[in-house]
Image 1: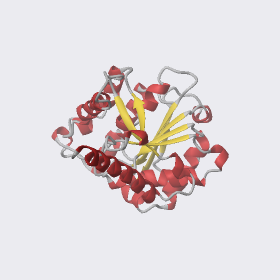
Image 2: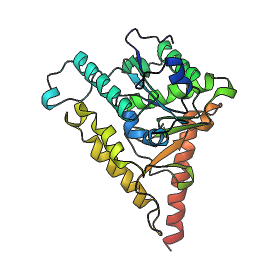
Image 3: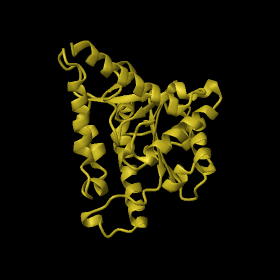
Image 4: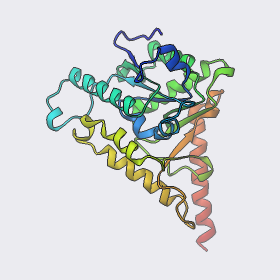
Length: 280
């Protein structure tokens, strides 16, 4: 494969040929930063773990520079942090039995500016893997790079021939959860199984967790909260849930801003209708 960055890498944990590794992909996760996949796309990882007929392939778009750091990582340079985070992502790919792990190594600025290299790389990945399901960031996330990645993924999917586009494109939670979506607009992703594996995958990213952010506890708590607070009049059906935003329609010609505005309008209408009904 030809990727635009000389420093880009494709890691195959079980060391099969690259062609075989990519061809077996059924679930593809495309995240902005090292650790985003483990926090947002656990559903896809669990769907494929210990299977021979389903394989999860990960894609990290940025290079890890500018990461938050504290304690023993406080004095690390950007170059050192990039190396640490790349190593952590490879560990996660090995623990999670990913089919392959792409490290595209773009600066965040290139993603936000929508450079040719970013667009070309994502299209190359999609054409090589031909996944059934793609997980990426949701369009209501409050992190600029996350939203930029989601927009680039949508554009890359649109550039594919319709016959080879993913069957489903899901926007996932990181820097804003999706509990606000009306229930009919939520994509429910149960993550009941292998809680120990989920914890191990999140715990791999020591540079971020010991470095000042307890993403592991926050993410596990969010999954459990979604499972309990989903239904007010029934018992819990799951022990962990991740909400997704269905981005599949955007592989056609819909405008992303108008699409999100419609989701927000449905939420507003639902809240106002309940108030009108109950205020007397």
